[in-house]
Length: 185
Ligand SMILES: C[S@@+](CC[C@H](N)C(=O)[O-])C[C@H]1O[C@@H](n2cnc3c(N)ncnc32)[C@H](O)[C@@H]1O
Image (cartoon, rainbow, N blue to C red; front, side, top):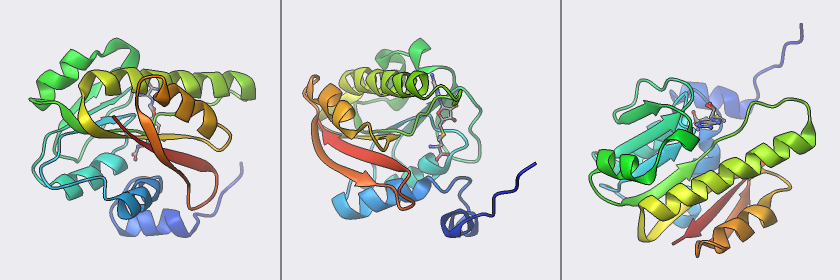
């Protein structure tokens, strides 16, 4: 059995009460582009175990927050649906939010199988599903933040642009393994 020593970001995440180090991807792009504001309505796709939602909650204060994941999310104040994004529609999310979303964030990732091409296709399909839901729930001017693999930035920006979501920035994860793309409606 192999043991991977927790790196700096994993330790920092734990110290700050976050379950996953992936929170720093969101924090970094938010600090540069001021994505969240107090009272904003947020949809979080692929929200478990809850680090991005916890960060969003801190930034939006008492704004509405709805998350969707195959796994359970707990410990954050919001509506969390344990379901696949392919089985959830925009109307359900809007009903729970009570108004159009200001921000949709997605850190969804498929379970990796070792088949690199198949995993790449499934990741792009999840980005496509996030785009469809973003066009259904976001207010005009609303922001979408999508996590994706290092080689997928161009494909993700193209699929967002086809729905009129214009890419503003693609940022490298602090550890360099993934990318986060920000676009606006
Ligand atoms: C990297 S984790 C998300 C971490 C989360 N953002 C956090 O900060 O705690 C990726 C998540 O995508 C979810 N996911 C994958 N496919 C999904 C689908 N079809 N519908 C909903 N969630 C999905 C997985 O269950 C997993 O929890």
